[in-house]
Length: 86
Image (tube, rainbow, N blue to C red; front, side, top):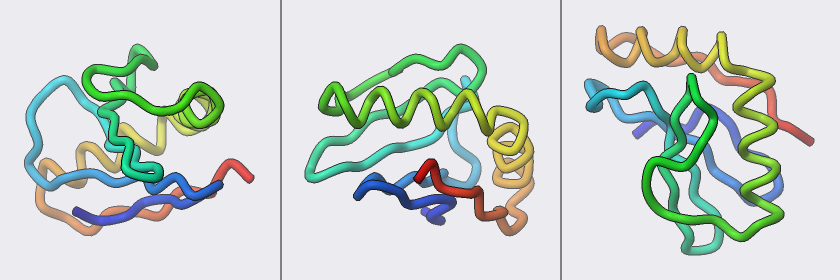
């Protein structure tokens, strides 16, 4: 599961050939969440309120890059790093 960004102790990753809808994984201090890229909400899991706010803001700012990585992952191609929030 390639890491595409890391900020504030939050690790953002994507799986290759993952299931729809397009999403990314956010991990923080034992919390895990799947975040819908296009709609900007938690599909499954949870994060503390502050970290959730950061992740959702970051996801909105980088939606196009995340979708590009989603397509790369679906084609088993190397993913691009995305600038951290902080």
